[in-house]
Length: 388
Ligand SMILES: Cc1cc2nc3c(=O)[nH]c(=O)nc-3n(C[C@H](O)[C@H](O)[C@H](O)COP(=O)(O)O)c2cc1C
Image 1 (cartoon, rainbow, N blue to C red):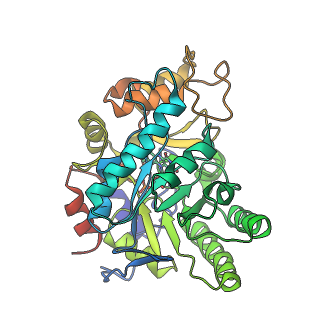
Image 2 (image 1 turned 90 degrees about the vertical axis):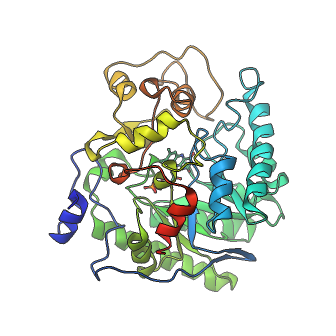
């Protein structure tokens, strides 16, 4: 029996993991026992996604055309991360913005071809430099949805204009959800097409203070989710349209999905599990690091983005915990970054990782990475997640 199952069975879920995470915050195995339900399609306005499963955007380069295209082709909603997406383009060293703009179009076109006409989206972090031009490039290249977090995407409606591209903020608290929706309502007379709630077990950057991550319990976070859903329902009434709510962070299997739906969500966003797939765009060594990882190898690290992040405690993390790594050149990734002051260059660390230089790279992971044991095809993973 795993630590997680043991804790849930003993009714002590929500207690701290030794690595600073939590025992399955909200995505607990259902206590109704062996939940299995037929998943209904996710309807986002006029877009229909066969299963209510969104593959979370993963940068740098972890979810590009191959992974996102395969997820959409298999009935989920594949999401390309635009974070330094052009890292392997010939002009990246000279002009990151141009390389990224070119790569956004290229990867969206490729993913859409793989997906055979099904919707494909992008994830664009608010904290990135040149955010407006990446949003416009994604819209022009035909992104069906844009999901945006790592900051509040307050001006996103302005950047997508009157295109049919669906937009969703990522929030982690009711306060942020209220602020976002009120802002869009007042300033643009519009609301979100859907909304992603990212909980404390997610991988990558987290919308919580480091201190909060140590104390928040399952019950507290589920209550927060319910409050966010209530806020969203208010805007549904006002705008006379359905605003699907998607829950992310720590969702591992079909039962977790059923549990998320049972507490009022319309769908889930899953990222870490899609890393261990044949189609994931990262180097094989990156995927192997996921397979080898144990629960105790996971740690909360501070990122130059100014938010805590969940990552593997590898040689790189141990090094930056001891002393900062001077930044020798800047890749213009963040709106607010002072290369002279940050403990390391996040672009360099993430590019090393995606290329398979595991010991010199930052490997973001979700809290449940220790439960991933093998690399499978996206087709098989989707079949497992939908409960086939
Ligand atoms: C390797 C990795 C990279 C990520 N990169 C991004 C990103 O670029 N932008 C973003 O908004 N979220 C990012 N995330 C968060 C995911 O999109 C997702 O919401 C979260 O990891 C879900 O939790 P799970 O991994 O437990 O399923 C990343 C997560 C991982 C594991």
